[in-house]
Length: 611
View 1: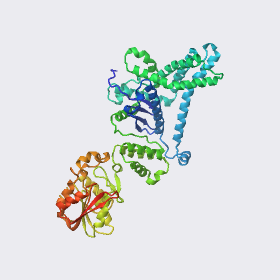
View 2: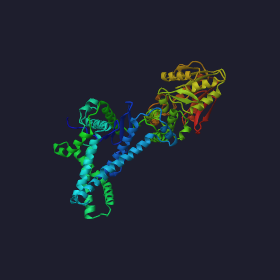
View 3: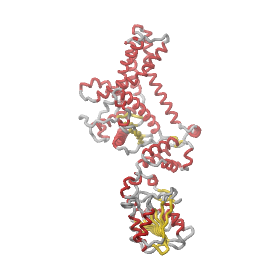
């Protein structure tokens, strides 16, 4: 294989039926669940420049990175276990009872129990057992001395190393661990493929080595060697030089264990620097130092299948994307979880992205089919429900408006289809509708300019049809918008005639009422609009020119040809524009009067002009 030319800081680990990759600004875990589907969880982590200066100090950074990686790795491992097991759609009576009574799932309890057992087992195997076995030998062969003697410490360290290797060998007997080691191989091969500068395809990854200099197995071997030396020194100082012993053997063993626990950060710091140092060199001269780690990696990595490589590549690419793009969205596994936990997670991430936190409540309410007021009552969200919620949540994180994701919204109590061809109707526009419904009399006609989704035209037509007969026409320059408007008229059983027209261009006749919610955003302010507006909603429906009033001028210049005597024009305007719009109509049209209607926030939102 050629020399590595594309070094990366991304590292990872195998998890249950998948791979976790961790970069500078993000980490991604990809697993294949029991249905054979890939699931991805991606979380942002604090970038190096925002971390404590301690993370850049040699030796100290090793201890910090060791424990942070341990925590992140354990979380990824536990989360992967939750993601891969597909729940039975009909939960057991025990599961239902626990969810209703204690608001916890069985998986939560099993996860906590597994974590406790894992920590306890590590302490017993690698801290308590080596000392216990050495004490037995010391009793049988007094010549080796006590804890303060070098031979005692070397024998204890030897036991620790042997237990470590035997533990690895025993795990090879477990089918689940053999599968995990294959995912470990996929992780190494993927990173090596990237570092060799090759495209991350399954075929390229398969050609690469499953051994890597920055492997956790190699790190653990270095930890074992350093711990033997450091613990021996500590024992010599404490029990030899200082002669710190008690008359109770169990107490001496406990003190020795506590000293070892205290020294673990020191061991980790030294081991980390050694690992990084040897990883810098590819020379055969350093191979003897790397060889023990490589030999152990032969045990803890196995050749992966194509499906496993696919998991590793996807995790690596997502991590690479998150490191390069701060807008790359986070992702979450679809697992059963608490409603409160899901709500808090969504709101937190929405707030960080500048997205209205209430959208989280809407997503939960609409998916779970419960009112927003019921979200305060704790319950367990099933895996199937969680999957539906996350599909919407992850799309919303990209900035896409919530109602475009659902494809519909509610306006004035009526359902309206919406997509990127039209603006999403705003609540303040309902003020205009109320004014229009009040103004129209039986037998009159109405023209709605810039109709968009048809929110104004369709709603007015549907409302007045309850007790009056009116003729409603809607116009828009966008053929796509008119398609949406016609669909909305059909859904709401509203009789509206839609015409493709640039304002009055294709309009014939006069109307008793002319309404419009035209574009009124200043061109210079378009770039400052919220992401969900500027990146997704149609610019043609937003940009009102340099001062935002271009369309009002155009309407005012020609309205006298289309408004009937005694008729009225009702317009929605932007904040601070009402008085200027009135001035424009007084200058450019023969209007008789003008008045303003404020919205609930006290903003002058609607202008009524009489002719």
